[in-house]
Figure 1: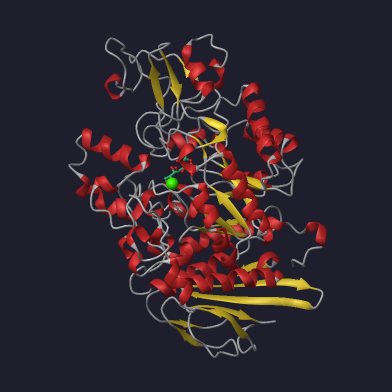
Figure 2: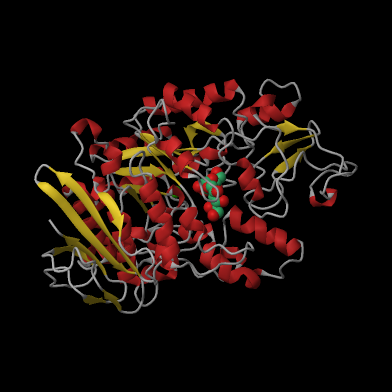
Length: 588
Ligand code: TEU
Ligand code: CA
């Protein structure tokens, strides 16, 4: 059984609650409709009041914004729209003065096509930086399964790309470039060419850039799609019969651990929070452990973001969603809780800037909005791992009721729809409306709802993306005034984490893996004063559900430490749980 760790084995990033800020949508200080860094500084007290320990800032670097900052044209400059380097320093200081750490997004699988490296790289076949990216000659379509009509090439160029890989944002993963008549690889948008990590100079430049930011006092990195940096030898074709084939080919490549090991040795240390975003289907736990085991056996990342729970409602077709089932959701978390119990550490999230809002996806954002938002929060803050709050989650912000393509901004939503319309697969937006409402990344990117004024207090100008009309009743001003709100509940959970080691370090034991609507588990820790045990009971249903405690706990005296309903329970007993009821029992 886990014991409370000695001081030298504690890690601040295990004890922390991280708050994710998507700057474009957080707070606009100058009325141009785009959130910015001075806008975040204005809200530093808000973050301190909520009680979070660390901010993860989505990319704020110079960028032409083909993918909202995930296409970086200068890694050492701040995007004009967001402010200046001195604004950034003021933000760092404002957070640090409040004991809030700051981690930055690191986007080095690809750069922007407007980065000086790529501008040079594409200029000629012998350009100094040619090998910084993946340039290849095209192929004769003869003898391939590929149709030259599917590719955008000038008249007279009857070629297909080096392989059949598809971009994560739809369409081919290769773009033909006129200047040298070769193709370059882009796993994301064509304005996001993949960097060639086999080139030592690329790695040196990236590591130097990371050091440059660490010298400026940041506390870690969130590493974008970091398990894509090593491409498979020979860039083999993907199996066209398999939808996710490109991902299968591209993830966890042959040299990924070598590259991350080099990064660990040269730039990182264990006092930094490093979280690697790891795309793909189910990841072998052995691979996961390698990423998060301290060096030299492992790559030394603090934790990773995997996608397994984000795939549960994915249908076979792009526009299809299926119902997720609670036993499957539990199975994913149980696998990871057990898999990283000894070595490594988990991140805990149910939404972010790429995913729909969690209360709309996993809760009931209508009748039991408040109750289900609180239940999901209880889960995230009482599993073993580091919880991530995505901006607005603490108010219970919901998905957006999209009515037309005019309201959509995201390249990952627009590209596939426009392709499908062009190819006659769908007629119009109406055909995909439900899917966009359920899944588009823009659901997460509508502005933070500060009050019920026009544009929710986000901007005095015209917001770059529409504000959710439910700002009238879901907004910061209201939730702060209401002691029973989702927001105050988050504060309670955050406080509990800093008060009780068992929440951070305790063992997790699932008790109801197969139950259709109950998720029940214990957290247990040996401390100097004996054994500390919490029992968490969650009713994932808009109906009442009978709770029958396990025999060894039944009848034990217990306080309810946190709950989203009034309770006067003083023991663990047979009971009827109300819709979306969550209870954290303290068994002492
Ligand atoms: O996301 C990686 C990624 O795979 C997602 O874009 C995924 O395709 C999408 O969420 C569909 O569910 C990271 C960033 O978080 C994302 O914002 C960037 O667009 C992407 O990388 C490229 O940098
Ligand atoms: Ca602005």
